[in-house]
Image 1 (cartoon, rainbow, N blue to C red):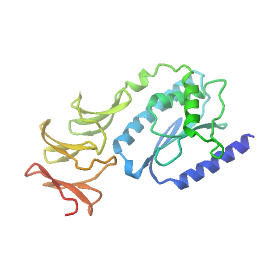
Image 2 (tube, helix red, strand yellow; image 1 turned 180 degrees about the vertical axis):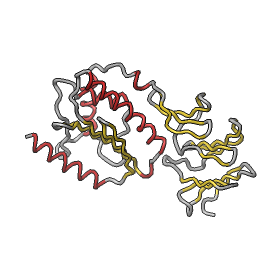
Image 3 (tube, rainbow, N blue to C red; image 1 turned 90 degrees about the vertical axis):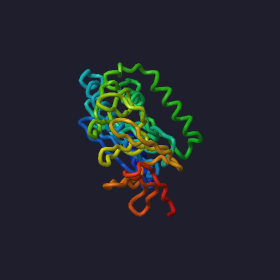
Image 4 (cartoon, rainbow, N blue to C red; image 1 turned 30 degrees about the horizontal axis):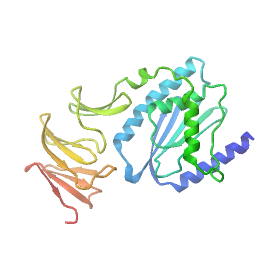
Amino acid sequence: MKFRTIIFFLILFTFKISATECITTEFRHKHLFFQLCQNHSNYNETTVLLYKARAIQLNKFIEDLIAQGKLKDKVFVIELYDPVLTWDHLHVTQSEHVCHIDGSGFLNFEMLARLVNYFTQPEWHSYIYDYDTTRDLGKIRETFETLIEKFPLPDLSAYTTEKISLWELDNYTLAYHDDKVSYFSSGTAMPYSPSSNLPVKIRDRYLFFLYDSIYVLQNRAVIFSYSIPNPQSDDFSVDVYDKWVNIGWGGDNVFYSYSYMKNVFYDVRGK
């Protein structure tokens, strides 16, 4: 029975990989191999950095459970897929040396910890949907999430409140804290939500990107802001020159250009 389950899962996994097109980022740790799949049209580098920090902290959580004797010394393989690319699912299986979690959606740290914690329970059993017979995948997933939420979690604050620096440019940093990433200026939180490209520098100015706007900072003050006419969920390509910053999808598809000399943005789409 176990052999049939493993074969079924491998067939399902192979089909899903071949049927999806995504940008995959991997994080490898002693007790964790984490794969994040983002759709090309939803790709965000700041999301990658968020999960880089979550993977670091989740590996610590797993190590602590092993040290406390609550979890067997195994490696967790976790794969999260952009929900637009796959079914609404959340599968858990394990073998002698590996615990496997496969799901759709960008799960937060608490849910990831709950899934790991589920493997410590005496009543643990594998959870795989049969796509041929299941009519409401979302309902099945909801039932499973309700199941794992009944198991008490250890205090997670030590993992989510630790500040982890993930990127820096001069006095600006992007750091993980309270299970999110935020920009800081010399240690002080900034009001810009990391929802698009990482900032870039042109001479003595910095461009901060949000999915719907761009802020130009000089001497830590906003000297210009630009509302993007067509907000998009994925990162732009950004090319910085001496007097210009070109923003778009590659060098042949420039959408907007920022002029350092005039401190303005130009919409050059179709021109």
